[in-house]
Length: 200
Image (cartoon, rainbow, N blue to C red; front, side, top):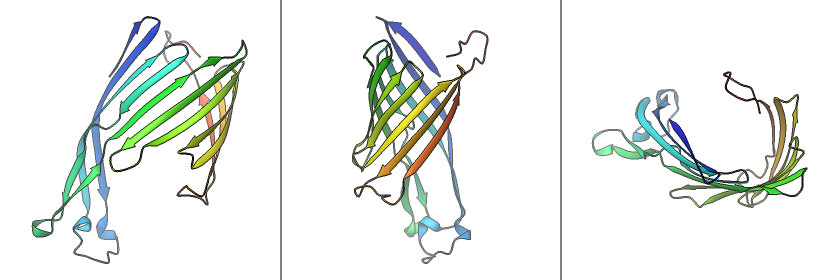
């Protein structure tokens, strides 16, 4: 469920979601070194309820958002009797995002943005990026994650409804996956689902 309110040339949007999450593991197909380990006692098939919420405030040139996609901390007991142990299936993830658009001139716009993520027991994670938009058609930018990985991205809009994007990310010695660079290619399509929807 989502709802949007307009006030003082800005928009407040908020949403709620509900669903279920299913966790499965075929432990009996594994070669377990310690067969008494309660975490691997038989196959697991666990279903838990899930709830999430998010809030966004935005205008023509600024954006602030907060979200908790899964609000419940789900625990489960593995094994039975004296060997039973309780484990966490999912811990809440908290997200915060902010961006601002600088109108350099009629053709150029610069959009820096930051995405923060916090999970209990882990350090705060920050994704920082900046994108230069040219004629609302071309985009070039750079990004970093925790100053451990760095990357470049580029995009182009064509035929009014299509967008092609490419991103390259390279880790450094401080990153876990120092031997892996990534390449990402995206093709987007914007269209009107109903008659009252405008094509962007």
